[in-house]
Length: 425
Ligand code: UD1
Image: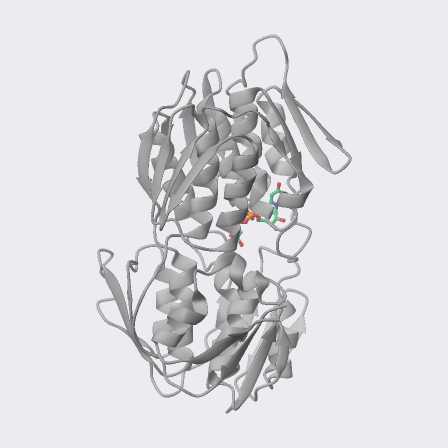
């Protein structure tokens, strides 16, 4: 298995381009299933989860053409509403094919998903919503087997309420509702910017959606969706990860192809830590310029659904707090098992005490390189950041998690002056 070897020390300086958002691209690729006409996407990131999703769509009969960051999907020949375990097991987002397949084909067989080992992560809310829209669903041999009752052959618009805020749950139900008969209202909807990006893509395909970005989304079902072009939004988590890497190393970095929009709370925390973010209050910035102090101040965070602090940035902030001045408290409220990186950071010398969903951290003067194991996607990113500031060499094993979600991370970090290399097994 490949590993990353990082020699800590260099300040990150210079400019790097941020890619399109993984978590917007994945549902939007699935939206192609809703139409018999082509969907042309630009700014699609080059990472393994996207490759897996494209394979999954192709084996269902979607024609996929990829040229650089542009992907054209043509689901006119969709023949098989089946998402097999072999493809789904590495990626929880595969469940996003369920709603579109059911709406377009009237049936779907989708393996229960795998993905990051950060808690139980059930899909009961997706199923609850689709049941309320008139489908019949059973879980058989590890597969969600869904069909629409023979009478109408269509899902029915309904009033839906999810028990908790779920991002992919909201996206699945919003996509299914686009082709349902009548009106659907999703209450307690996720307000994440990626939900809004998906809604914008669906609207450009002819869907009737209002309220995306608020906690009540209304969808009026239409007969069919048509061809469209859409540009995927910038990846706010990749942006935040590079900002943390620059901050931890006392760097001076400009990120292009992204903006401070959607990153308010992350930017605030980095400024609390002592970073300067040039023009931070303008939402229309075409790039973000961060200048870090020699040593950061510790900052406490509490994760919560958007617009509060994202759980996908929690691990990276644990890394920067590991070497900051003072004590920080980190509370994880979204996933019950998302502190696995803490044990690995401790191997590098971090002072962290975990009690349930709370971590209390005391910044140390320096971390020391060691061999560590990446346990999930964002945990891997936190280990990279820690490796960049640790004394000596840090070896990060199991980096396939990192490759799932980051577009050429070591090449981008090298551009900024990091001493990082991949050793192939
Ligand atoms: C998405 C993101 C992921 C991010 C997460 C939270 C994608 C592809 N992934 O994941 O990067 O960390 O949002 O911002 O967009 N839950 C249930 N039942 C359900 C659905 C969810 O109990 O049917 C629970 C989950 O276990 C979790 C919480 O709800 O505790 C939120 O999960 P959810 O928002 O659904 O996460 P994902 O959409 O899988």
